[in-house]
Image (cartoon, rainbow, N blue to C red):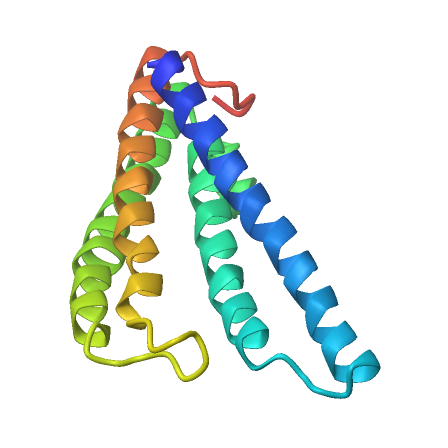
Length: 162
């Protein structure tokens, strides 16, 4: 399980990092073409917006794997160990259902729908290509939530509150 988690973490960190670096380079290119060449690049701004969405979804998957999502521990901290485990498992199950319904199912639907739309400045590439990251990250989130539940039940999680 730890090997799968470390492989997923490495892949997501690499992809999110590449996306971030590409955004920085493309934004600098956009500024250069706009202010120095006085002829703004039409494609870089659109690509940066898609890369931002990709980096955000990849980062959200990383947070899911680390169990770093927001929570309010005021009530949970006052409960016993078994009840805490149950609540933590419930939170992971809710994350799993959300990922399955919204990211995977909804992502497939929107990706298919957007395959008929073409980007305005990226050479007529289908917009759905950029939306494919939604179901991909949804599946990754689902894998992470299952791994998190296993860790919670085995008490091998790195989080201190369990």
